[in-house]
Length: 259
Ligand SMILES: [Fe+2]
Ligand SMILES: [Fe+2]
Image (cartoon, rainbow, N blue to C red):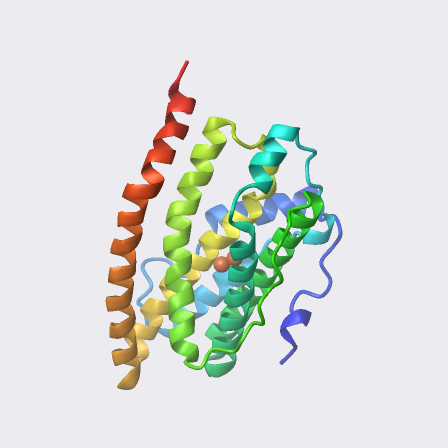
């Protein structure tokens, strides 16, 4: 099997409009050739998951993204967000954990989908690194990325984290867009990344359904442990959201709704 870095080794510098339109269409409208519901745990379901992930790939290249020029206020707003270190490191960690879990599993379809997911996490990291460079955002040195001891647990935590993080991040992104906090060109630059995160969640949810339908013994205990921890994690997030983030969001909403 090829190295992760070689999965998509020939991305065009500038994909044609037709290619990009096709990728955008597939990401929004892809469906399996098999009609009707797919039962988790079956070969058809598992193959459809892998096909979906492969066929909805967007061939954009981080190194050629043109970052829009920002006025001083917007630039300050972007550079002062306290998220860049953690965002870059989260993508690096996700790549490592997904690749490690993909190496561990035997099923060729799920292995293929998870390796592609790991590759895309690395591309997110590259996108963020390019943004940081373009806007001169000071960054702390990255800590070493260490292979997880419990590979499946680490993958589960990463998968659930993507679901929780996206729930809040997509909403905040939409509010920031409506409030005009960021220019439209910058928001559009992130559209493929947001679409990818949606695909990652779709893959994770389907992998989880497949895994639950096919696993045995110790794995069941591991999954129950994750569900309990994530129940608590979710409640904690809701609490933080209500007490810390909600007042800020209400301010943004006031900006968006004020005449
Ligand atoms: Fe990501
Ligand atoms: Fe992701």
